[in-house]
Length: 101
Image (cartoon, rainbow, N blue to C red; front, side, top):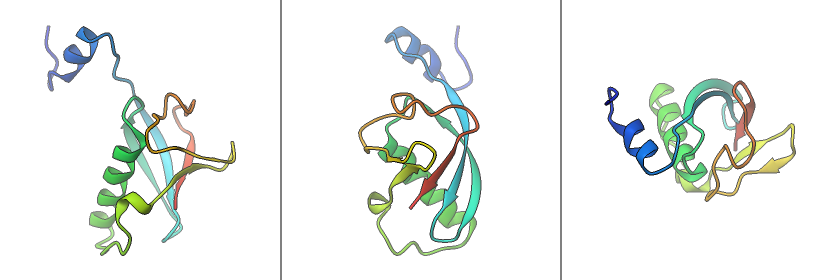
């Protein structure tokens, strides 16, 4: 059986599971919040790239910093997420608020 993207079956066949969650992300440079639907198994560095790109496009920004210089943080747990980890590994849950600084 195949879903609309074909990705879920590939991940399930590899023993992985794609889990989409919604997180609230506060973009520090503008102090604005955005809701993102993200794959909790994707590496933080890739999520940051996607988030920065989408925010820049939506707000018509020329982002001065390379997206690799942004950090994804969790204020509640007082930690910065290492770029090579996933939100699942960092125990981020549906509806959590994160900061992109």
